[in-house]
Each structure stands twice: as C-alpha cells, then as structure tokens.
Length: 396
Figure 1: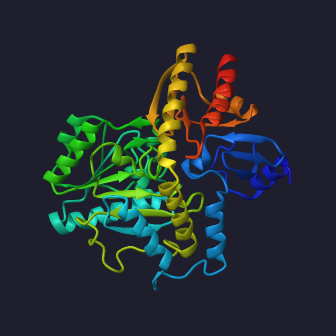
Figure 2: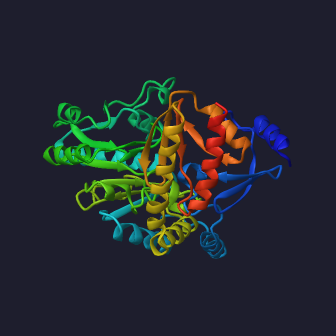
C-alpha cells in the first residue's frame, strides 16, 4: 500500500486518538526510516526515545527471533529465565534491589504508585497516602498516572480524578519544604522532564527531595521512562545527580523497540508487595525480556554511553550556535541525547518543514522542539540534521 491507502485504512478503522502527520513509515535501519512511498528520513525522534539502538539493530532482532522460536509467552505462574536475567542486569547497574516487569511506562508508574501507597499504609497508617509530583511532569495516560501528571490538559474530561495527589513547581526547593509532610507517602519526579519541555532537574532540588523523603519516611520515585537507559550518557539519569531514589520506573528504550516496562525498587521498599498485590499478564514475558537483555548488554558493552556523551555535547553546542543566528530561538537545554530548543514562535510548522527535507523531529507544548535521536547517532548524522534545521530556520 502507498501512504494515501494506509492513511485511509487507518482513518476508517482506528480510533482517532493521535494527531498524526501524513507519513506512513514502513521500514527502518539505524537512524533512518522510509515511508510507504519510498522517501527516506533521518529519524531524530526514534519512536519517542524507544529505538535506543536505532531501528532493527541486528543483535536485538536476532535475540527476538531466537526467543520467538523457543517460547514467546508463558504465564507468571511459572519462572521465566530471561526475566531473571534482565532483572539481574538492571539491579547490578543501579541502586535497585528487585524489579517488577510490565509493558509500558504508564504501567511502571502505576506499579510505583501502588507500591508507595501500600508502603505508606504499612509504615505510617491510613493517612499516609499523598503523592507529590511536579507541574509540567508527565507520568502516563492511565487514570492514576494522568492524575500524577502535573498538566491539566491531560486530565480534562476524565474527572473525577483519584484523590491524594499534590503538585509543586519543578526545581522549587521551598515548595518541597511546604508540601512534604507526615501524609506524604511518595514524591515522583522526572530527572529530566520530557513531555513538559526538556527541563533538567537541579541537583539541589533532587537532593532536598531525597532528604525530606528520608525525614518523613516517604519514597522518592524517579520516573526515567524517557530519560533512562543511556539517554543522558549515564546508564540511568539519576547517576548524573548524585541522588539515589527508592524507586525507578523504566520503559521506552528498555526493549530497544520492543514493548516492556519495569519498576525497580531498592531494599527499603522492594519487599512491600506480596503475591497478589500486583500483576501483569504480559509483564516480563520471554520475548520482551530477551529484547531487553540484548539491548542493555549492547549499551553497556559497546561504548554507547560514551557515544551519547560525546555526540550529545557536540549536538548541543551546534544547536547553541544556531540560536546565535536566529533570534526566535530562546534557549537550548537538555543532557546527552535528550535535547530541547525553546522558540518564541510555533514549532509545528518547523517540524513539518523538516519532514519535507527528510528530518523527523517533534514539538512538545506549542514551541519546544525535542530531539531524541538513537543513542548510536554519530557526528556526521548530526551535521546532516543541522543542515536541514538551518535550512528550515532560514525560511521562517
């Protein structure tokens, strides 16, 4: 089918929940994808930080094929070898003690919310249930996670929302002191806010959150669904800030393109759940975990983190150079290969024009361009993207 036919088929049978661009991607390799009409694009979205090793990485594809020929799914009523192996890699490279597997970032955050609520009831009684998150945060699309999300646009129309959530401005230390108390069972924060506009946490803000959670025996949750698994140049984003959380939530890049999520808990709270407290039919299935094992081993054993730091710094410097040329660029911010460019003009038209020239980027909010290229991207590909960006900006 060509693009027009795919669009018509989708519009006829698929619910209209996405504001899609008129492009139908049918093939990908590395940092490039091709649409149904044969047009090639350089992909600086990578499935919204999912395809961490680029599209169709040979090692990940091979792992999926091998596992699919043996066993794709078996219930968590039984032990699953790849599940244990993947959990081992995560724990040995983090501050975690135990892992719960699910299928997405929203599910990982749901699990974290439930664990925090139960931990609060055990250690502080019936009134220890409040969860504090930040404005401009994003934690998922389920009813509980849109409530944890500090953006009303995701909540509108779905009221009444679950109770027990409070919001504070990101990086506002005084608000932490004003809002964390004996009722608080958890604070959930993104070390780098992704959907909110690529805002990087300040070390003192995270450090203060850690100290206050310790003071009130609350859990500190870091949502690393978007910023984790190498995206910042460290295996996990919190490792840039010298602050250890009690819970880390992961998804997106964890499977290298295959759906999988995880909640990682430290020794303080990893034994809170008992059999029956939480579950996931597909969570930690052999196929997803095999993809995760291949992805993490590739990242950890092939200098990918060093590549992210080097190329990320190069890309950021070049974006800042562009900001000196074009007055409508207000700020460039981010860490590693999670970068944002805030504009004083609307961003969607820029995204569309970049697509015409063969570059995929996206816009969060109305005016923040977000760049999430694969972690394997190189300087030459960055230069190619920069040429397209400058060409686009010159026509504004």
